[in-house]
Image 1 (spheres, rainbow, N blue to C red):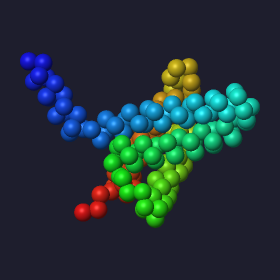
Image 2 (tube, helix red, strand yellow):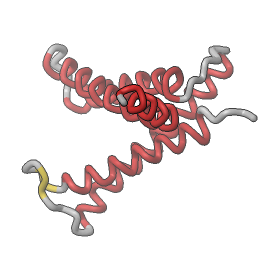
Image 3 (cartoon, one colour):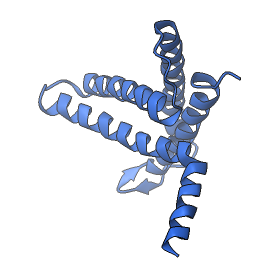
Length: 149
């Protein structure tokens, strides 16, 4: 019975591997962002704005490498190929970053300003974060790391 359960789990994992690994690397990317931000603010004594920018850059670079290798299994390291991928990846992240910067205040202004964890507008932030995560996956899957057939 345990063998059958393990086989079913493996089949499910094989079927949804890309999404599972994308989720895990997304959590790790968030942790990189938070850790770099905290180090910049606490140890380096940098401003919140500079620390946030450095943390975003570190997180995007981490996300690019982990998405390339583990999520989408893109192993071509030819410089032209990597540059194309990296530019597309970073461009997509900038686009979704702008979407997030605009959407959260807009949703709050439109009435989605309820408090979550004691933070006004956190529901808007969570909703937009989910949309951004989906958009990042779609852009990565269909544009950045698409398989040429």
